[in-house]
Length: 229
Image 1 (cartoon, helix red, strand yellow):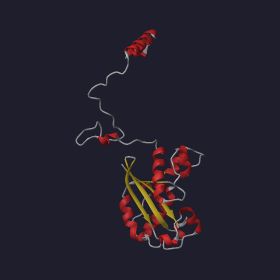
Image 2 (cartoon, helix red, strand yellow):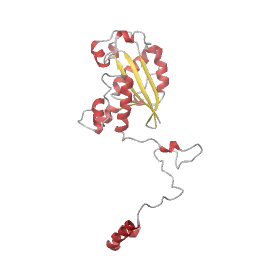
Image 3 (spheres, helix red, strand yellow):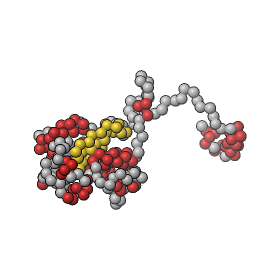
């Protein structure tokens, strides 16, 4: 199962009022584990950077002047995402900007059904509690000390950790470690179970402990569960 944890930085809040994307960062997950494969791109917004936006992410006109325009990277971004589920905090905001940029290029827009909003998940799971990315980092004891300014790739990496905590801290599919040609009991990651050991492990219970346990069970009488197994 491939998922893309994604974040954007922009010049403002409304693409229909001339605001543009200036950075995209994305982290690939496979079976809920980071693969190390990422997408990161600074983008020339073809307009000036408002001071309010600069204060958030620190990306100024001079820095962005020689970066590619969205029309130069739009297709590569779509190719990276593909049809994978996109994990986004406040997904409606990022999707609004991504689809505006894609639409101006004449490229296919991304359906909202392809996005999973971690902000909505957090609000359902912790009603009435702060649900910002920083607040969730505090809740889950995730180190975000390097987040002095918003940055799309760093925020995506942090969001990936938050997302895994929100869905229950899912562990990797240990069946993936099976050697080539080795069969697992099921093909599905969620249904995987370890196969029985070829040899039973030796008991670590001492004779004294075994005798004490037997005496305890006898003292329970005939109603003891152990005697019915």
